[in-house]
Image (tube, rainbow, N blue to C red; front, side, top):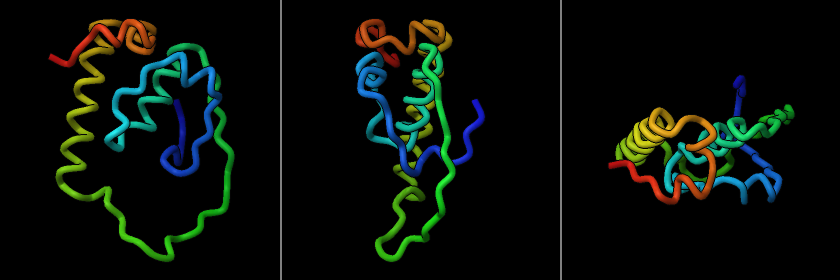
Length: 102
């Protein structure tokens, strides 16, 4: 899966989002989770180039240690499920609802 900038503007088909269970909405792994699960279910991903516009105001929050730790934890939990259940099993809503990271 070759994507250059998947954390910027993302648009998804509603039926694709309803097909998967999004678990990691509270970390930066959120976008990667959607892409990985959608690909595992045979969904097509398209990347469209847009012009980059630098931030005018506000403050970046992605470099906070707690946010980085949460994202790393989510990545490990996701990987453990992926190995245990396989790609399609890990992507499907009903199967993930029964699994845990324990």
